[in-house]
Image (cartoon, rainbow, N blue to C red):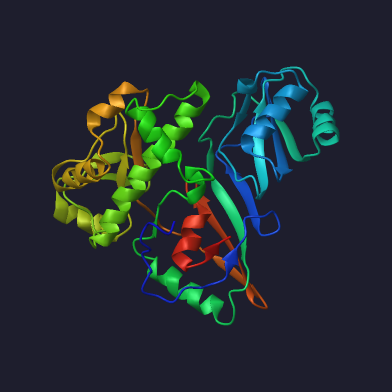
Length: 340
């Protein structure tokens, strides 16, 4: 995250170190809907650590003789976190107790719940995640410094950057995606979506960083594609004065580009900024027509809910919720916490 500007950079950093390890990093999914108790898909809520989401998906598929695509999940989770995550398995007739016992005995995952539902769990089928993070060695006054940063983020909110884990261990996934997009590199089909998504994320972060650097993060612009906070509906900002009032009241927020061939772009001054960010990356709109990359919009900031803090000697624990697709490491970066 160091290459993108912090909104609260003028405030003293909280300090300390966050280590992405199960002891210091807990994530619990918040489900999007209640399960019906009936249907051909068996939903398992399990606690795991030291495994990627893809590894768990493959292990479950192998255990029950399924194709991995028959095992659904709502979102990717960090390998080194202690995660409470739900998977769906296309097991029409298998008894719940038998599945639970086999998974615990043969895979070693702790099963917290097992229930049936009518549809497969798909990417995005969650409200968000609950995080519990320990910042180690923050020192005296860490809570007060954190409170000052959180107050600064109160309006309009936390920049919705993609976190470092989006870009791969070496941080070069976006560059790989760009090379593939331009026909300069070949990739196996299973890697293409991941690398192209990293490129989209890099371009979004660069666009957001430029808006912050130009002092426009807390302003809505003519031609922005805004989102209604209550319904999620997108609309074009045409009456700037009236939308400024709604923006200040927290009723709407603007979105940024996740580039693709079918992405709905901003207009007017806001569009000029989007195209300038794309040009800075030496890319053009037509480049995205070469791949199956439709594009979308992403909210530019998050209005944070309560952040609970617990002090223990020189350490500080944070408990908070974020919506799906958002990164806890983005908040840690704003707090000025080092990522080990």
